[in-house]
Image 1 (cartoon, rainbow, N blue to C red):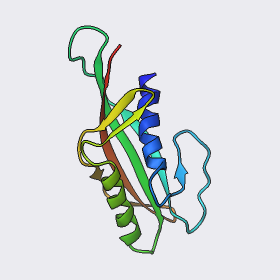
Image 2: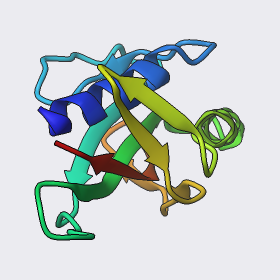
Image 3: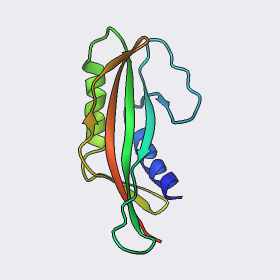
Image 4: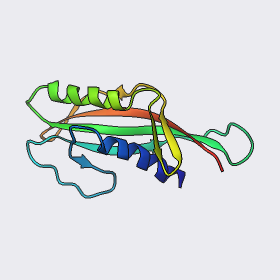
Length: 134
């Protein structure tokens, strides 16, 4: 259940950001509206780190928010959202779901923007770490 708790903690924090942005959550149906920005969410879990013998471990990974803005409108709106993501998911920020805390391990990384169809797309990686105890 730790994977679900980590996902819930980080996704809840993203959903609470203001202003809100339409979101394509992982493995859900989403149809973008032409000319309207939205964000896509994915998660990658790293290999668990066993600090000691027993059931406890650290689970790290990347919470990836990919910003999808209409092409031709410049970079200012996407850059503003990136700054909001970094202000929310700053290094050391902690988000809890059902007793499990996911900690932002480092400042979010902004990856190179690409063009996908009619969108200017910029992935932002939020590295996280959670200590799982039994």
